[in-house]
Image (tube, rainbow, N blue to C red; front, top):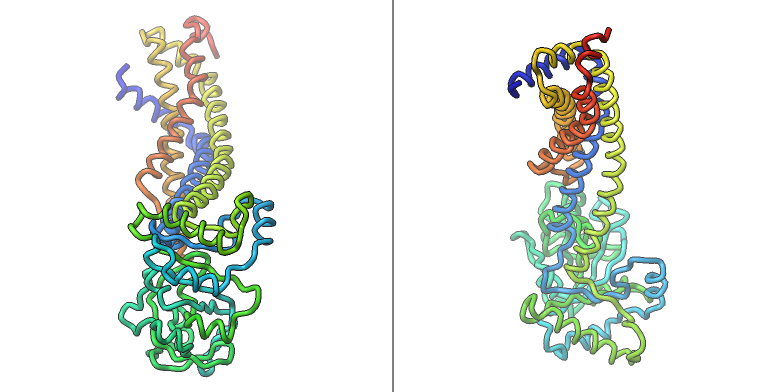
Length: 409
């Protein structure tokens, strides 16, 4: 039998039992829909994290009190470390680090911000040095400017605001030159940033950046965290040398014994990406295993339905074999029916899963995305399940004795 004839027979058999065929597809549809949805969301989230959340350049690193925390034991150890201090940053930024091209520091806390009758109760107020904008490549998009070293050293009450702060406090107004209040203290807005999104745990559209000396004088409290941002000299090639130099300098500054671990931590782009890969991979595996249960159930249903179909069509199989059909023709026929069933379920599942991803993206703005690879994966996986599920019924049909099959009622 030609493949064209096998397809016609398979389609005719599927159309003969429409309701049964649809019920057979449900498990495959649910499984593929779930997998496509999960993969689409995680793929989009990975892209978003790479582009928006992990904002560190590859030649930049952060010195913090905690660093990367992966366990409760690491957290307990980190909480015992002394705070990083402004005095230590002054030493670091004085030019003693030959492998550091640029340094900056920042601290932040949640404070109320208001303008006129508009008030935001919890806003990220960031105190930073003037170099903070250059280290992180922050821009105002032509709407004002960042404060200078002189303004920071003079502790002037100036501020740069995020896009959401502008929209909520200054709707339909140009914020430049206007006075907003941070925890009751007046600050003149000198810059407004375009939409940025989240980065390093902070929504940069909802922050107010003020000079570090003003922040230190008015808002900084004992126990508040400070972080050092350092750009390595020589680009990515100089990153390891810069980290080693900073580590050695801070250990010497804190009189840390060579036996003791670092009393501080480092954050680099590679570390953050590796941490995210571990989190996203674990989530993907868990959700995929859950979705695979539906695919497995769908495969079992297809196998059982195909076994029932073999039993119902035993006489038809006997007639075909008596008229000269080979065993391989019978086997291909039932394998093709199972594959077509699961392929149809896979296509429906891809459409539903893709629609769900696009719906989530449209309604919530969540960075989900559907790629050609995801579509091909859903279709290919469903087809493979159908072939595996149809193998046993197809083999049983092909091995039926011709005489017994013809006598079957």
